[in-house]
Length: 301
Image (spheres, rainbow, N blue to C red):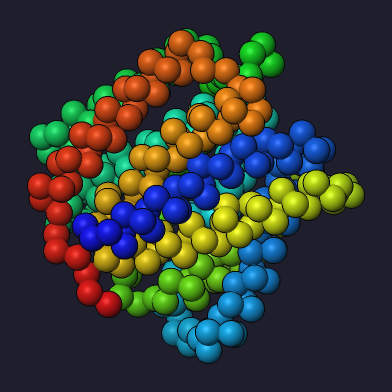
């Protein structure tokens, strides 16, 4: 891969990696988890509409493009945003970040089943097993990174649901890689996601309470560097390399989440998290190396 793709992956990972810490800080401000992601999605939608207009882009006219936006809004945004925001009530940002690191492994499994040019064999299989072993260690250790108030099994289950949704969404987007503009798709994704999340919020939480000035700052951070920028870069990368390589944003996300949680929120690096996280990262490294050997030529768009 060229330097631009690596930079895009790094910047996207930085935004997503620090968003867990920002979300936990917002939860501490009294913002309910689903309301948090609903407002975040609304702000991102408005920003993207402005960006699309300023860039002279137009909304798609084909049914296929709108279907893609709806599918991504559900699987790549609504499901993971909601499940992971709720999970952050029961575990540290580092813990949730390590579950997110499974994205390349789960993506590789889906790619093997659904994409004929991305088979799962050799080191990829070993990497997948190592990652799953890491999750098992996390669950058996009982460590959550936030002490006695944590519920690691619930947090892991919620987070893994989001991982599965994201992984399948990446495969779906890859199969339609020539049919979308990254900025427009991101806008459609957030618009559909906002509608879905808001409907769920009304049923699950009711209307949100007033938000403090610091809470609004955190929401703004989650909107721009934590949402819009990473998604734009992810779709840009996805059009130029394989799905497994594009999902390597998750390779750096857990490290950033873990370190930023420890430094900013005084989260704990517990033994189970360290060992389980190491196994997960070994799995991701194996997936990465195997994909380098067999990956297809970059797509030129």
